[in-house]
Structure formats: C-alpha cells, structure tokens
Length: 129
Figure (cartoon, rainbow, N blue to C red):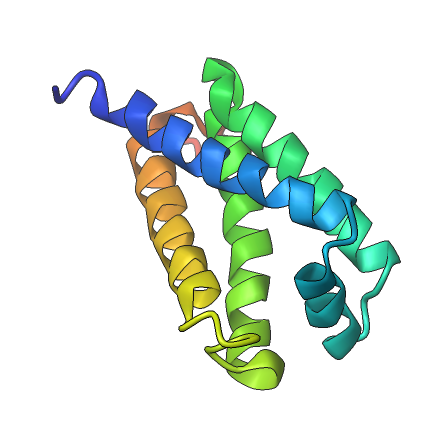
C-alpha cells in the first residue's frame, strides 16, 4: 500500500481538479457567481480552469509531479484565500463543501510535494571545500 499511496494521492487530486472543469468551462451559474464576486469573470474563470487542467496533467506524469503539486498549491491556496476574504465558507447554500474540498485538495497537494521533493531540481548547489 505504501508503494501505491503516492499514485492514489496524485489521482485523487487530479480527479478533483478535473471534475471542477465542467463547471468552469460551461459557465455554470455557481462558477459564474463565484468569479463575478471576486472580479475575475469570465477571463479568470477560464484561465484558472486551464491552469487546473495543466496541473492535473502534470500530476499524472511521473517527472512533473512536483510541478503539478506546486501549481495546485498556488491555485487552491488562492481559492482558499478568496473564500476567507471575499466569498465566505458557504457559497449558495452548499454547506461549505467547496471550501472543504479546497482545503483537502491543498493538504493532499502539499503531501504530494513532500513525497516528491527529491524530484525538484536543484539549480544552485553550494560548493563545499
């Protein structure tokens, strides 16, 4: 199980990101409401959807998992901040499920990044000696 856990986490985050795309790309009323409220409708809704699609693909490619995790942390971190500052926890009587999903996705992406930290290229290595 320990061997398969990283793959399961990657798939879970990718599925969460991908399943939200239908709301963003079809201009679902809830998605339009959210992005209008934060002043990013429609360009921000579509751009964030594209970035989430890219992140989900990168999470599925072994050599780019860490990049997908970093992008996910950035996008979902922004979503969490929007919930806390402008949107509120509950949106359109959803019981906070959107916010809870964002927090769970953020935590899972952070765990993925920690698991794949050895894959992050080191640009500058300090020379000793």
